[in-house]
Image 1: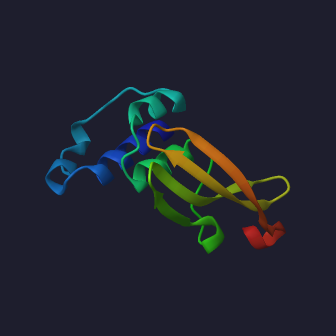
Image 2: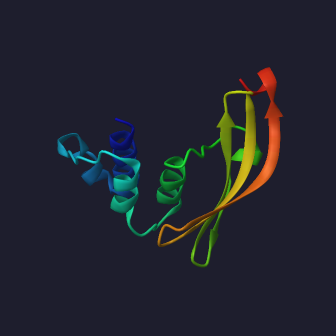
Length: 118
């Protein structure tokens, strides 16, 4: 279910408006996150980079420390958030994604702990 949501979002973002109207009829049977990553192929834009990072559990946050990005010569750099439930905390992570889908991560530290993160 989650993979199909990612796929639908990717197609909606990547398609022109006239193509996006036909998304209801498209069904692709991707069963795992690995299959979805393979389906993405070359990472051509920020949206695809964000979708790839999401398959590894990294998310956008409403805090600037978990919601930045910039284009690099051969990919993208994103500052996203990794949410941990026990104990509750948000960690900022720098993620570099190359156009071929290779991901390199580096922790930028915890910026929220406890009930303030809810």
